Length: 112
Image (cartoon, rainbow, N blue to C red; front, side, top):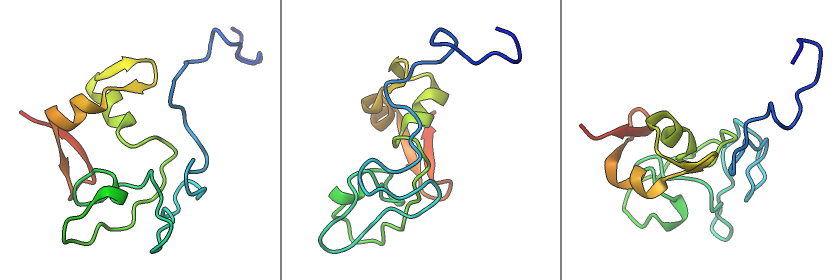
């Protein structure tokens, strides 16, 4: 492919879960905090203390206000660790069992 030609389908990396400019649940743009109120909480947002889905967090702590990054939670971590079931399809189960959430870093780290 030359520098001036547009990429065709063969040049594009396929991902099942691809970058999205807005959150698929609450619609906020990249860099904005996920929507949160008493009646309609975003299904995509994570708890910044546990790394798990904020909607299901029933622990007695402040979950923080996560910002939408454009990527599904855990996808980038799984790609970095090589834990993919296929292109763009992260092995989230492996992430939850072979890594731990580091609330100070705000990301998953491999267990040693």
